[in-house]
Image 1 (cartoon, rainbow, N blue to C red):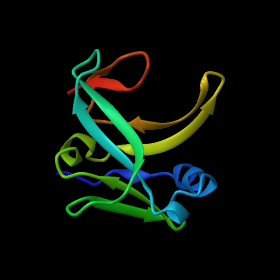
Image 2: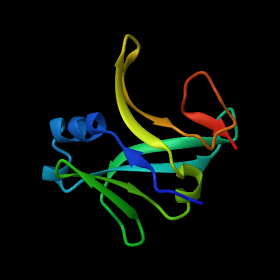
Image 3: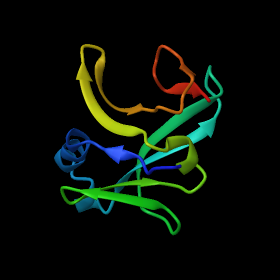
Image 4: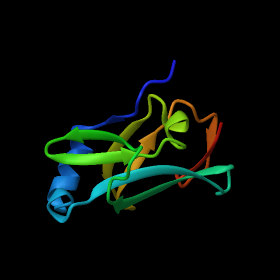
Length: 107
């Protein structure tokens, strides 16, 4: 059974910090072919489009297109700050393997 992805409070808070909603933007999380493991995440600010799944919290939006949605079933979208930098990350239970950078995976 496919469950929608979840977004952490920390990810929504970061979107609020950068003023995404005030700019009419949402965080788009998509899955594309490519990367060193077969698929890669594309994460960017974008405007919601018809057919997108819209996840809302703290006045902010995260959107996922219908093609990417099965790949992100039950995934967790988070924001992390580490020594190497701050970024949005995906904890995806569907990925059977991933590369060291965390942006590429296989199913």
